[in-house]
Length: 289
Length: 168
Image (cartoon, rainbow over all chains, first blue to last red; front, side, top):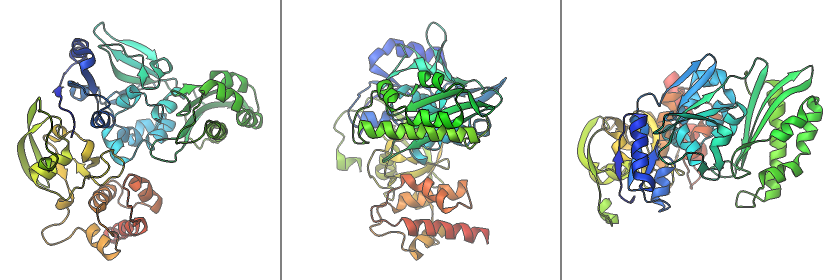
């Protein structure tokens, strides 16, 4: 039994924004409910209003515009897992989406809901970071755009301000010759650790690379310092550098020991996953682009 | 039944819904916070769908909404307005069981049987999506349907057999 609430069904972003601004802490955004209903059931939140954004036209589409892929906030994980545009242009995201929860969660939950809940134990954000994704935010004063890396602020914390909502995720194409891969391990339902790598190789050496890790730190994040160090390394050297990156990862991710594993275990497994993801991306196993 | 849990707090808002359940329209006024599981069990009167973990993990409450499997324990019922819901009661055609039900019986794919309605509905959705799944594809799809009796091999065998029957 859920604590009672009212449901509002705005039909424009502006209307949703003004309701959210008016109701403040009394309202929460409802974009699928895969996480939200659980929070209400367990008494962690008791909202007076759900602002259902799924009836706003245009928030549930996937389009490709000059190579840039635009994903509406209300697109479900299942759609992302199976959509041909996502498979062709963002295969590492398709791979990450295929691991979200289970088939029922993927049918119900949305990308926007997942990113805004900002649970560090989530998959889509990690994959999106190596694609340099950004998010479009709607609000009373019009829209604004933020890199996803800045949108994700911390555990269960995003850059959304009162009255704002995530409306779209924009993903620029990887340049020709780049390839990406996503890997994760889990003991239970949510991932214990996940990584994504995007890579461009020139004459057997790392020309450019992007690396992201989720679950192990307070939020999914890019490993920019490590990326810089790998520039110009041979694939063999890069593999060794990633496996030896544990001190850096520990300092960067500040892991905690919990039921999923000790901090040391998480760091070790992350360094291994990073090396494997780089190898997969280099071999093209993570798919083209 | 909602009666069995006693609604402890007063509903703030109700809404009128028409849900096609197993092919038959059901119309009613429901609290907006009611989940589909409760509406199916206590309002529509179909108790085949089981309450399990109430956390979207176990799959006992799996039903299909417009063909997609969802956790009815965590799916707000107002969302099903205008949609088609299929529960385990909708599988058989009168006394003629669905091939999946026949295969589950033949292979003893249930012991206590509590998870079985959910397993069947997940399996039904899988075969609609992928008529010829591999064992690994079955395992991946059913990863969210827990059977504590451990009938997984028999469940997977049943699905493989039904897929083969349909191909023949």
